[in-house]
Length: 77
Image (cartoon, rainbow, N blue to C red; front, side, top):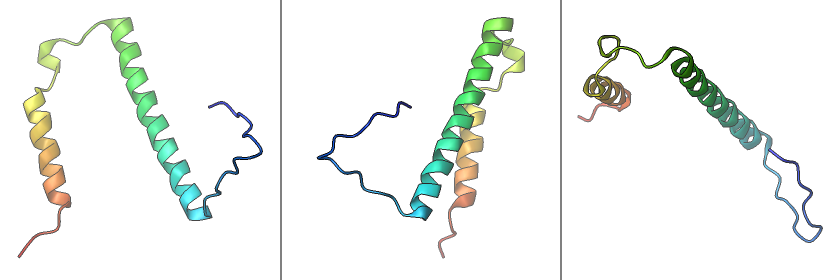
């Protein structure tokens, strides 16, 4: 990100320390996800696409993700 000076008539609102830490953590997680995606794309560029037999159908991925989400929700009585 570029560090551009702000005009004198527009003061920036400072975040409290907990909010600043949360933003930094989000930035780190986003950067980690971007690095993982970049690594996958570089592997595809170098080695080509994987064979169909080595891939997981999207339906299975969807169902696994939905199951994870359902497990995170509190049970309703």
